[in-house]
Length: 281
Image (cartoon, rainbow, N blue to C red; front, side, top):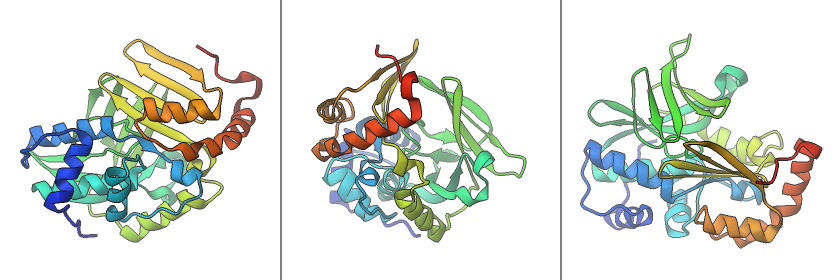
């Protein structure tokens, strides 16, 4: 897919949405500022999937949702809008297809993630849509970086793909990719599958995530986790009203219809944890 740049009016609206002031230029300080602002202003969330709404990989549709409607979204939406914004500024941007946890799921997961390759003082991996875990551009070279409070690493797999990994406590999430243009049909097919198949983790579980300066917020079902320099704090939400309030106050999105998800969230929590539910803190 050739990236359609945002119009000047759309770019101005996007920059206002993430709180970045013009002027902007196709340079590393601008790229860094936009990525950092984006992941703090626009949360990662799958509420539309949970509500049974159809989703696409069309950046124009994502712009209407993330910018005009002031919602969050998932990788196809975040990086679709971000790629169009960066292209409008003058960056050389390529959409790339990736496979989340490919080491466990195999090649059939390729297309389960959209990320970006941006040429700016050398090639950079840019990704505002991987659960808000990546907080800044990553040089396309083996290495380790601290995207406070989460460590990020990039290296090569045994079959010469790139693998980016982010550690969250004792666990790590990763995806594999090749630095070449995405197979857009593959992205569309995996978007459709993840949005509607009962085996998809996005269908099974509510997830909302957002970065702050130096901390990280994650809502999985009814469990809210705050990750900071001194570790994690967790607590369980107690009602549909609290869910809607948390979405508004911590994740900056106003989605009152999310209250309708509460019975399914409670049922899923009981099935997953039972008597070993997260402790209240």
